[in-house]
Image (cartoon, rainbow, N blue to C red; front, side, top):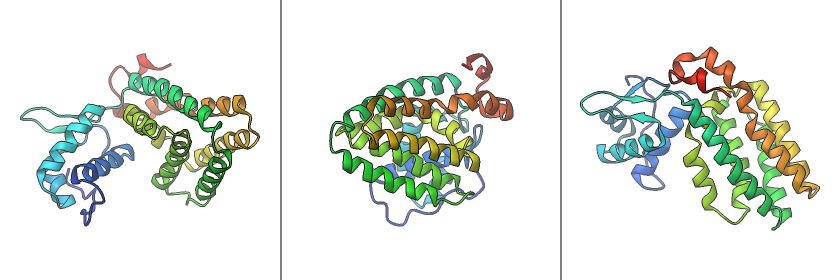
Length: 235
């Protein structure tokens, strides 16, 4: 890893390990560190201006998510995307988020609507070339739903399960996809505003699963990003 990927950490808001983990997670999801790229504790520590211990701890957490292949006496590599892991993440995310939405709609509906409306207004002002910024806002829309269910741990569970899915979702974020995502979010919000739980659930399921429709094209366009069995695992 020779290129400068990270800015130094001036004043981490949490632990150094958490801050390093978040920086690496985002770099992998946003393809700044693509599959097959080599990373080293020394380089990351130098770029982030931290000691090697928090980097080592972050590497361990990322390897547990399936992002890093840590090999003794050999270079640590960013792993290829696993199609099976994407499918597993889709199943888990749908189950948890749909249930969160169902519960959230039985609580303070006005508060939920206000939060989602504000988030959508920010999505609409996101610049066309800011895929990373839009991805963050897209994630926040779904985190709001989970948080309003009263089960704040759910989003952490979803995030831990959907690592490979995040990489796919970012690769699909063209400006045209921005518009589609906003429309899909609008439909979810409209159903919530109308207190139509069944419609809201259906729209959420459709939105979450939409990425699977583009998966074959992404595998064909970027075969080196995926594991060797990717085509066999496609839905």
